[in-house]
Length: 144
Image (cartoon, rainbow, N blue to C red):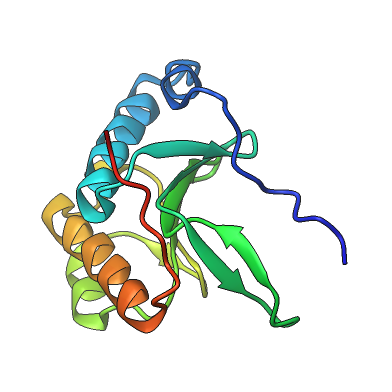
């Protein structure tokens, strides 16, 4: 079986965010770090070169073998902020959220100003709680 390409690294989250040239995108990333830290009580860490993940868990794919992964995270992609929110999402919260796209494991937001931040915080927190309840193998990495 091939090794996963996306793995945790020792790269600095602060340096990564500081390297973002767009002021608005950089501030959005700082806000997301605060929101996801609040939801997970985990210290952020880089996964690969462009994903910031929070918490540690085992992800079980089609093979049934565990793969180290994070509980929630995000990446400041060119087109949008990609928020990794695993599992089902509360449809009522999604309706209240504002302008956002979604796929099975991601929520896509162009700017945090496009969404209601309070609703986004609830959505992130609820997603993490559901993940922990449904997947007791999640191992939160405590913030220091």
